[in-house]
Image 1 (spheres, one colour):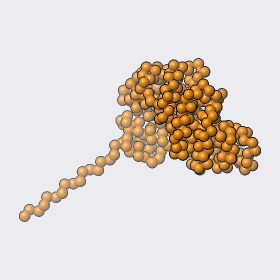
Image 2 (cartoon, rainbow, N blue to C red):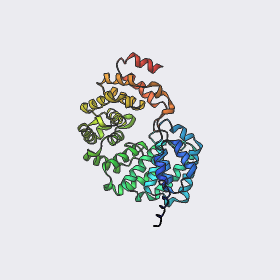
Image 3 (cartoon, helix red, strand yellow):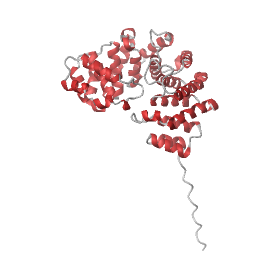
Image 4 (tube, rainbow, N blue to C red):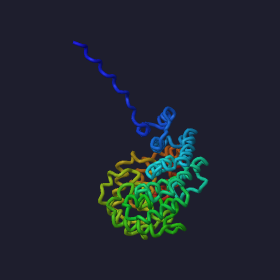
Length: 373
């Protein structure tokens, strides 16, 4: 009989979509290598590349902002937004802005928002282009996307016109917002200098958001609990728990019923700091936070460990845990500004550490020696 027909050649190997390849990159160097080899022609791939850069390790971020390749990407983003604005929808704009905030573009500190000259000229031009693309379409953003956009611009700093548009849009469709979106929105308002007592405070939106969150605290756990408590704690002057009593009672009560042992160190340190600054008293919850520090101190970043120690020292009654936190602190990393995360001011954690030592009666000699060193 006739010989069997040869097997057809295997189909050519299909590479994953480019946006998926960017998402799977293991480092900033891999992202740049992939971009050099394949570019990022479409908005989805370009957005995925920036989002992956936003996940850079803390020690990679300072070098990333100084890298000429990153500066060229920012210029390219600005150009694309001017030429092809319609290709950048709400979800993509929100995710890109969040990535820029995580990298530290624009503002170098959480609010009040940094002055317009913060960051390089390229960074500021890029943020203006993003804001110009987002402002006309804020009503097209879903509630989650709008809260993400507000949160992102609270990290980077942004024009007042965009924030005004976000506030107006959120008021028109407030019933679309859930508790988590409200937590992000209040955090953004506070950190852009629009908290209670400020000139541009959006009182109607703020009061509605606080009232809703106080009545529906069941979804406000971990970072959402910390964010909304910190937004309402009163800033540098503190005392916000007295003017937002129902919110603090509801959110802290919900947190007290939760298994805080599963919370992340960042979430615990932020929530406890908000309780201390706000002047709220909840000994049971703070005791749980203290137990979290004791059990998981090695997992805390130095800045979070300082926040934890400061909060407990300010609240009072946990001197032994504060002493353990100070002994567990890596003082060399705390002082190394190359590891300073986006969103913290230079020297801020060291200054707060001085406050910890001042607040504790008779801190451990080893802690004082390391602090002096």
